[in-house]
Amino acid sequence: MNAERVPFLDLNSQHREMEQKFISAFRDILRSGKFISGPSVEEFEKAFASFCGTRFAIGVGSGTDALRFALIAAGVKNGDLVITVPNTFIATSEAISQAGASPIFVDVDLKTSNMSPELLEDYLRKNCFKDDLTGETIHTGTGKALRAIVPVHLYGQTADMDPINQIAREFGLTVIEDACQAHGARYFSKDKGRWISAGALAKAGAFSFYPGKNLGAFGEAGAVTTDDPEMAATIRMIRDHGQMKKYFHDMEGYNGRLDSIQASVLNLKLKRLREWNGMRQSLASRYNQMLSGVSSVITPAVPSWSRPVYHLYVIRVPQRDMLQGFLSGGGIDTGLHYPVPLHQQKAYRNLGYRSGSFPASEQLSKEILSLPMFPSLSSQQQERVVDRIRLFCERYLP
Image (cartoon, rainbow, N blue to C red; front, side, top):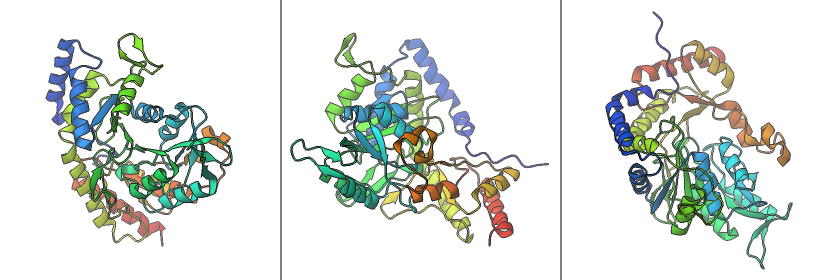
């Protein structure tokens, strides 16, 4: 009898375990009639702010909403420029464009897959200057104002935020974290002398609660975290058609609210998030140990300042496509995050980048492979994954 496939992601196990709690929460909302905003949203916003160590968390409709609203609230407007990385999901750059700005890419560090502070600084010093009259940072090639930096905490590991924040302060730029994959990830800030959670490392943090995330809803949902009361108030208006009081609109906004049903799911799951993250960390350690003797495989690098939560466990390997097919043939599902860097996407041909513009991102796109990773992944399933990788490397790689 053939063994069952090892899924890339399995949400059913945690949902079965909590099914009666979900049903009870849904029943309460049904009987209350409060489907938009309401007590469950307020409860979640307070709890998630506490989890991240920020004063405020504002629930919104998705992670893309979270990043877009944070950028708008930070003052990004039509014609501005915002720096991010090409090695990310397109929602990062979409949010920049939808805020009215244009994305500029800087490459990532090959080891961490996150924004390289050195390349960021090099780009700013070579391509931008501070206007003494306006205080704005101007991009010399276009004459446009550079307004913000969006580092991405990819795969559940934070970017190196101290140097990013330092260079941002020098150039007068706002930093907004794309923390959509980093719920509970930690960073040791030498500047502040302590461990800090993702979402509390800059002006604001944007989170996604897409179902497959470490903290996932039963549909689309997101949140912005910040310590800034003015930014929090502005985002509350932006998410609700620009109103703080019903039918009195201070600005144009969006329909981007977090609904009560999703908030009720998130309230229940948030209580388990530290436990689930710990299980992911244990699984990652076991992967690292079992793959340590496979010379062709590069396991995730974890700097001393990082405590990742492994939204994804991503290896690098030659002949990636061949390995993915070999694993699939052995009943093992995997993923690619991401196979085409943003600067090589058709959607961004107008930006004028070419192949070779960002060599680290391009190399990663050819080598990365995301292995099965979810809290209920069994030791037997992990062993099947690793045994199949070993077999492939013995057969096909020197």
